[in-house]
Image (cartoon, rainbow, N blue to C red):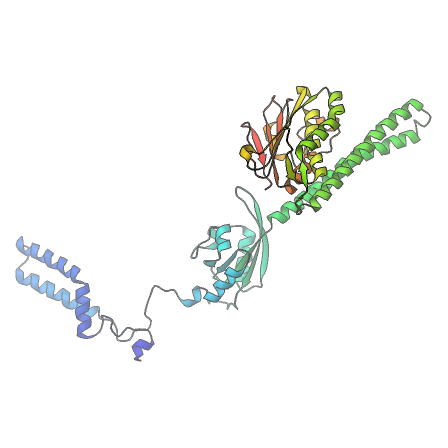
Length: 445
């Protein structure tokens, strides 16, 4: 092998010897043809003599042949391929692709050199783009700068804002030892972990404890105050004692309902991953719930109207939990929609013979403002706090309904128009939910 071949030269390149000169002239023929045409035009308009034109053309050809000749030895042959130290090897790319989390390979300048498919799906990163084009969080950028300067591996948590806020943990580490100074060799691996679900769970847990504590504190304070009063000033007042005992009984009952709902919610969450399979007839469940709530409806001046099929509507489920679902929905309709004087309960077979049954519970009361609809199934959330306390609600009823339906792979639709009441629709096994324009459809499938 010649020296030229060993260092990257091309022995047949058009740059050396007679063949090389001719090849270069052929490559530049367009230039010389243009120059010849221009000189011919100048001769025709008597701006230059034919001899002078020929001398200029010959001089141009000679200049090109002599001064564009390549050196015999080329120290480096330039190609479109970047230096190997800038792009990760195949093994590094395969390592990134094997990771279950988004992974990006960076150089020390912060330029993306490779991103696995998960990173491309999560962040629109393209090789060759600076990382800061997409992620500009100061803590994030600072952690990268320290690792790029030769520091130890770092991890940092940051919030990525957008249509939905998401929390991530970024882990930076040198993929190989990085020299200091102007040496730009080596890579930095960046791995993302999505912490959004964890952060949301933490917030829900904190809010839950705070709300539960608040809900229990009020009746406990009442009990404590009345006990102190009965032990002191009202010790010998029989009338006050009877009145205070009645209030204490109500507060104790309120705490009992709250604890029962908390325990029920906890049991449902523990079984959330287990789909019930026992056959349950929805028609029988709804009839039983309506019969049990008739005395409450009569006391509130509400009539419960039912439209149920003559045939059983069988779904796989847990009978006790489904009783709890429809008891909550129908009881809420009676209590909060009592101004409408009636509640309609309808159960329909699968539409078109496909999917599952659809059950609707509609009241004709004041309705629910649209801004409250998306949050109705949150724990302890109340659209009307005073009305909820007046009806002795715990704020957990619809949260329990949500978790039970989630376990049964059913969907809950909540629809309302001001002054026209509210409609709660339960659709089993993929049946569709439709309704008025102002609606909120909560899907758990």
